[in-house]
Image (cartoon, rainbow, N blue to C red; front, side, top):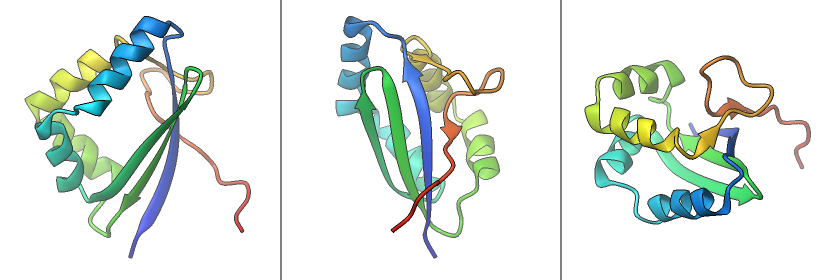
Amino acid sequence: MTNRYCLALDLVNDPQLIGEYEAYHRDVWPEIKKSITDSGITAMEIYRAGNRLFMIMETDASFSFERKGAMDATNPKVQEWEQLMWKYQQAIPVAKEGEKWVMMDRIFSL
C-alpha cells in the first residue's frame, strides 16, 4: 500500500538564500536521506515556483507523521538540519504556529 502526501512551504524571498537552499538540496546529508527512508518514505520530490515549495511524498504502510516526528525528535543530525533549514524557510500564511510544511488538500484528480 502506497500513500501520497502533498505539502507546501515558503522560502524567505531572497535570491541568495534560495540559491543556498537549493545547493543544500543538491547534496542532502546522508543522515537526512537515511532518516527519510527509515521512516517509511519511499519517494520524495520538492518543486519550487518563486519562493513557494511543493513537496510530494510517497510512503509505505509503516509511515505516519507521528512516527516520523518522534524519530526526528531523537535524531541530533535531523535536528541540526531542521535548525539550519529555518534560515531559509518561512511558514505559508495558513500554517499554524511553529508549523513548517503544511498538508495540501487535493481538489482534483483524473
